[in-house]
Amino acid sequence: MISLQSLGVGRGKGGKRGRSKNKLNVKEFLYSVRNEQKEIDELNARIYELEMSLLPSGIRYDKDKVQTSPSDTVTDREIALADYMTLLEGHKDELAKRRTQAEKMIQKIDDPFARTILSMRFLSIKKYSMYDIGKVIGLSEPQTWRIYRNALRKLNMIVNDSLQF
Image: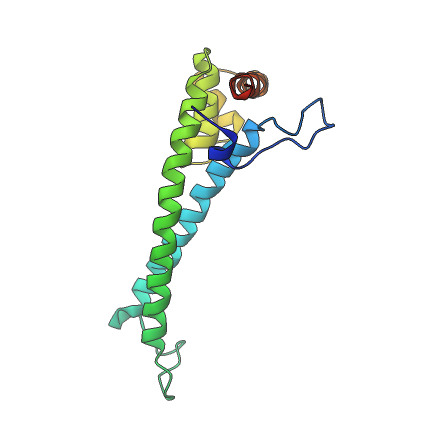
């Protein structure tokens, strides 16, 4: 069961197209899942850079300062690497939970085209444009946008109806 507390984001601000403060904005939640993946990718890239800088061949004598002071840059890099790795593990755990919730939400839609569009848009690692998604499933870009908007509307109704007591 999906709850507002478990999702933690996307409550409507009220007054806009009739949304009340207790309703969940599904689009906002799905975008937060996609953005979490971007943050993980950025952390992975930073970790890779730090790992490469710790290798003997990673020191560029023409650009990196050779250690002439008592501060130990290698130790600083190792500490930064450990910090990033800890942060990455936390993000991965959170993303796994949120992706599972998003997948369950998307599976509640009956239309297979709509499920495919939402999955490719929000859950795929590669960021697809609506043109690309339409090409994959054999629809034009305007048709893909129409199905996408309708799917988000339906998903908002499904999720918010199930949240009401």
